[in-house]
Structure formats: structure tokens, C-alpha cells
Image (tube, rainbow, N blue to C red):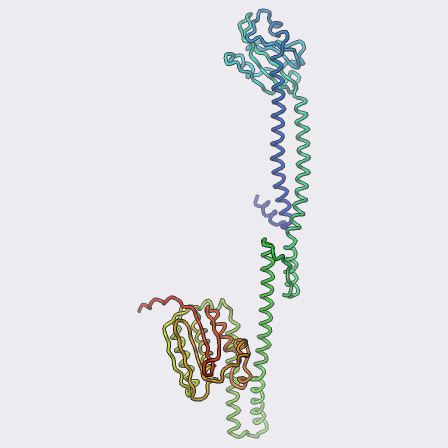
Length: 475
């Protein structure tokens, strides 16, 4: 059975559907055909039985008087001899009518009619004559033979040849009709399977085309009103290819932007190193101040490269890698840690903070990096001796600086990767800081925005949903 099931599972879906449809129709047709045959059989036998009952009621010379002149019929039944007629007793041979077609074989059930004479029951059964022909037999009790005081029963029968012939012809017709129905059902099932699986074929061809050519622009046409499983699968495939195409485009854009951003520091680093190498090779020493400036430039460019590579690694991390480290974090502690680093980078600035407790679910290191990036921007664009105000209340973190601010036309681009304002391109940075901020905040379920501040400068606003306060640690 398991081999048959495995063999069935190995067939194509179209073939399986056709077989299932044909099997279902075959079962239904077989059930209807068998039911129809038995109903017709019952009706034919009912007609034959009625004819037998009519035979024993027709007037004529009682056969009982022919077989025994001393018999006194109990019910006075009379009939016109037809087909098979005979009298039987509990013992002895039957008395067969001279006009009978033959002798009916006697069974124990026929003798039971005589034994149960007081019940007045008649039996109808299938039997055979002395030549083995099938007959329908009715046995009816008549009375007592005065000669030997034995009960006597009348048997009449009619051949079943015509009835059986009719039933055989009906069975053949039903078999032919069933066969035609099953073949038609198989053909219809195959046609239905082809029509129903056409979208699946298109989907398969599209997937094979994408696998072969890596062309993610392929789309499967779907009726907007269709809600069946195939339509849903086609829409899911279209959504998947669109997402993959968008991801590939972003990946290519990231690689192009990263290459562009890496080219400048690498070129400057290479130039400075070549100057130092040429000085050593030619024996012409570079003045101490110039050499110190070159080494400082090399160090700054290497720091910038390291920061850029770190930002690229952060952006390349998957959501699953971040999800493994997510935990409940005290946001005020994270902001306080980031403030210490910001004060070291802008010692000349007045950085004030008003922090209220708030817990969020996020990756601690990524969240601190995002807050540091926001504070770094505020420090970078604040004038010497300026002020930066930081406030955290009810899950809303605001960082306000008093710098030149951001023009309205540039606000839509501030969170794009590698985007830098024309006024900020001379300053250190890779253009990835705010992009990392936006991604981290979104993954924590929050939102971030930059807007002009009243009185000049820029205010950065981060909104993060709260998390249940963690239980106190047990010492």
C-alpha cells in the first residue's frame, strides 16, 4: 500500500488530479449503476411474483383432484395450467401437471409450507427445474389429501430466462455507460487540471526563468479580483521578486556609494604614503612640521576608513543577528553613556541633559551607537562655545543644537545612506550615521525625525515604545 501511495505521490500534479477525478466519478457511477441494477432486479422479480400469485387464483380444474380423487382442497384454489405446476406432499414424489414445462426441484423450505399449514403462508424463491433451468417458484398450501391424511401444497413457477437476460443486458449497458463515464471523467479531469494548473505552470516557468537568468523583473499576471490560492501564490511571488529586486538595487547602490566614499580617503592616504616613501628613497627629508602634518593626516584617514568600515558592517548585519541580542534596556543609562562620549568630543560645548527613566526593547550596543551618532551630529554642527540640550521624557528623546540648521529642501534626504549636505562635505564623516540611527530606531519599533528648531539650529526627535520594567537583580 505504501509503495502504491509513494508511486501516486511521484506522479505529476496534473496526473494525480486526473486520477482523483476519474476515481471519484468511477466510484459514483459504480454506486449509481449497482443501485440501479438492484432496483430494476427488484421491480422485475416483483412483477414475476405478482404473475405467480395471479396464476394460483385463476379458475380451472384443480390439479389436486387429478392427483387424488379423494382429496378435499382446503382453500379450493383453481388455476389454468401454465409454465410449471405441480403438487407436493411432506413425503413422496410431486404430482406434476401434464401441461407443465417440467418438474420443479423441491427444497426443505417448500415442505415447511406444509408443516406450517395453520399459518397459511406462501413462499417465493428462486429455484431450478429438472433440467437445471432457473425458475421463480411460489409454494402455496392447499389442504389435506384424504387418502393418506398428508398436507398438500401447490407449486407454480415461471422461467427466469427472460428476466435474467434483461438483467444481464442492463448490467452490460450500465458497464458500458460507466466505462464511458469514467473515461469522460478522466478526460474532463485532465482538461480541468490543465486549466486550473495553468497559473502554476506560468509560476513554474517564471521561477525557472529567474533561476536561470537572475532576472528579477519577471511578473506573473494576476486578476485583481481573484482570491484563490493560485492567485495568492502569484501575488506572493510578485511581491518576493519585487523585494529581491529592490534589495539587489539597494545592495548595488550601497556598493557603489561605499566605493565612492572609500576612494577619497584611500587616494589621500596613498598620496601621503607615497610622499613619505619618496622622501626616504631620495634621501630628501621632509621638514619636521610637514612630516608631522602628513602623519597626522594618515592617522586621520585611517580612523575615517575604520569608522566607514564599521558603519558598513553595521548596515550589513541582518535582522536575525540583531534579534539574538535584543533585551530590555534602560534608555536613560544608554543616553548618559553616550553623553559622556559626546562631552569628550566637544569639551568646549555646554551639553545639558534632563533624563527621566524609560525602558525599551532593543540591542544595547546598537541603541547606544544610534544615540552617539545623534549627539555627534549636534556636536559637529554646534558653534564653538555653543549649547546642546538633551531631554528624555515618556519615551521621547530630543537633542537640540544651535548650529546653522538644515534647509527644508534637504530634510527628506538626511537619513539616506552616504547622503551629506554640501556644507558638511568638508567635515569628517561617511554619511552613514543618520542612516544607522533610522534603521536602529525602526527595528526597535520607534521613529526618528529631524526638524528646524525655534530660534535656529536643529532638533532631533526619537520616539521609542516602552517595555515592562525588568525585575531587580538578585544579589
